[in-house]
Image (cartoon, rainbow, N blue to C red; front, side):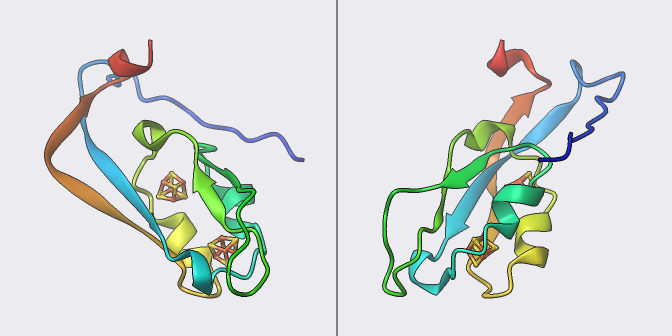
Length: 98
Ligand code: SF4
Ligand code: SF4
């Protein structure tokens, strides 16, 4: 797998980031793995679950790391994943991860 590059902003510790809720419509998924492969924050992995198509949909490993970039939604050929902002909740920088 190619190495993923991710730069952290200089003010990341001070900036409040919105919290994400990742929604996966498992039975629409065709198991292509694009969302898993190209998520810049590596918050998705293939699940053990089988859906109605006999495919393994993604599952969320660390929702708090999601950057709400929407790339998984853009790249999914089946419209099976989308991300919404949790209202009234914020992450503060990376404090919660450490
Ligand atoms: S919105 Fe971006 S960071 Fe969040 S799961 Fe989708 S691709 Fe990954
Ligand atoms: S990109 Fe869409 S169809 Fe492909 S594994 Fe992810 S959710 Fe499933």
